[in-house]
Image (cartoon, rainbow, N blue to C red; front, side, top):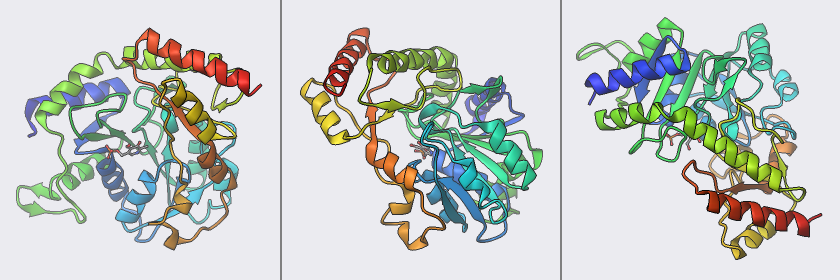
Length: 335
Ligand SMILES: Cc1ncc(COP(=O)(O)O)c(C=O)c1O
């Protein structure tokens, strides 16, 4: 645990994302929970989360004694709807922005709104490591950026792992304590709500090696997503028609009128599709005791209609071609 491999990976990741501090942790959920704790918000603060982003942010907000407010999303890019968010500007203390499917939300607009209203910003980059907007990496716009190194992530390890990046020295100092029992010095607890959360050395060494080829594997993901998108002429709608540097194509998700039909159609041709995410946070059985502050109809519709195509950098050209051929057939039968 700890040691050179971990600190070397932290340094290299800090250089890669262009942040003053990177602190490694045991998972992406820990990064969200410890990140929210480090903000030191008043108890029961309202934290805005996207309603369609898989529930990770909502769970972290609840674990830290705060209250998630479910935000509706844009029908065009499936990211937080800033007009909706604006209705809550006076009531919220923080926002978790999830760069969903690997594509960054519009951070300049979000940061302008957040600064104006004194709202803290956490960027959940579990799906978006390496994405760039206006020459800045995902995770470096807000107060804190969080990452997951779960094996299927764009930078995937050999087990669970996560990290936080921040330019803020005070947050970094707090996070450093929060991840190790709240210790100021050994056995001397100075931080409340602390825990232990560590990235192990073998995982860190593997991640450090894989970081060297992250840009290449992100490029391959972009290439695959671009091929998929251009193979569909109808029968599905994507966040973008062209895949730019702000999208590291963690997932290849579109929306279609009848996802079950599409899943069966592709399945019959030997291509397995999945869905991210079929249930909005506001309709989750374990969360609906919270009630909703305002209806989120776009999120509800998108969650009913999402379909995910297979995407990994190691897919062969033949596999990608097969998906593209089935995509053309699907479009043909949905013209
Ligand atoms: C957007 C998002 N946030 C947070 C997490 C949680 O990360 P981890 O599984 O490493 O705890 C995930 C993992 O799937 C995720 O996709």
